[in-house]
Image 1 (cartoon, rainbow, N blue to C red):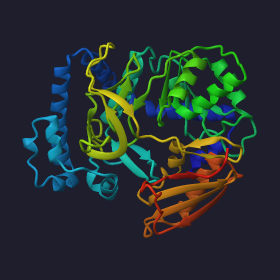
Image 2 (cartoon, rainbow, N blue to C red; image 1 turned 120 degrees about the horizontal axis):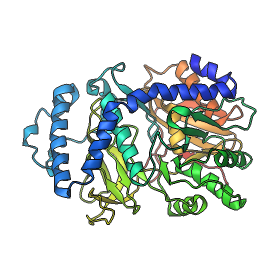
Image 3 (cartoon, rainbow, N blue to C red; image 1 turned 60 degrees about the horizontal axis):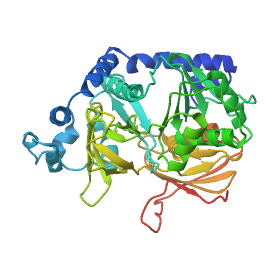
Image 4 (spheres, one colour; image 1 turned 90 degrees about the horizontal axis):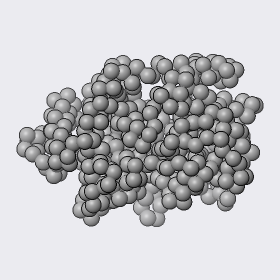
Length: 455
């Protein structure tokens, strides 16, 4: 546990709010600088371009990005040594380039980085298979990604930094031994109330609803299942909400039709889905008609083969850790329909199938979703190869780890246990075992979470 986290955990809630806001103000310059506003203006103009000009821009960016990776990454120079990258004239020509998978990215990360840790912005990913990785973005990359995300939201009426938002995410905002029923902290820098997704028990959700009614957010965002838990509680207890958000923006999990209907019914606002990734994948966003569109300015999506829905991503906002034909592990169904009455021209995605709804329970019965479980490992980059979390009892989790044995130490186990305490509380028993290989399911698929607890 770091010094700042120790200070935070032992401070009064008022000062914890101050620290959250201070962290927000510290992050804002790397996210919302001059380049952010320039790119917002560019995206507004890009939306109005005809499809042919958008595709021409995408191809131009693709060629430049491949050349950039070749010039700046020894990994890509070696990977493309038998390919004439100047012969890539169309999006289809991408197939001339080799596929990059997660193992290749992880094993060669030092030869892929183009910026130092000090000069870039680091992103930590746990990954849905339990593998941890640190990616780096240039500062321009990060501002472009924030601009794309906020441009998507502005299309349906929400203006980030100007309007209030309630966020359900995996931040460590509640100390393990806190007695007060205050499961949220305020980030004044973004007009954002952050709600803990780790304390959503039947006993506690009423406090969340009271807070939301007082805060009156203009939008809700964050983990889909967390927001559904709140909506279900409101509906079951016939609670009157005193606010009506402009929109709801779920992240990190695959939407279900039942959950979408629940959120829209309870909060009287439309749900708009989005797809990206912590590694830096291109964006897919929903328009005002709730149709999924590829954001052509952000990169390229392609299927790994004609008979597969698994996608490869090439992202133009990953100059710090270039992703070209990256096998991200997600699946999408592309639509043959190219027209939408919303006026946008991005290629249409019929369905996103990649993200999972697996979860673990806390001893109190709250659900910790797969995104938060994966984040248990985010501070252990390039040490954990694969992890599996098995729960047979509400108060006990067995953790199987495949690790880099030359690099793994007791300090890493302590770090993992500290993360468990923050997410699951002190009453969760955690058994950690180092194994040579974690067995796969009969289907051949790897499951990060195996939950055997009966509801």
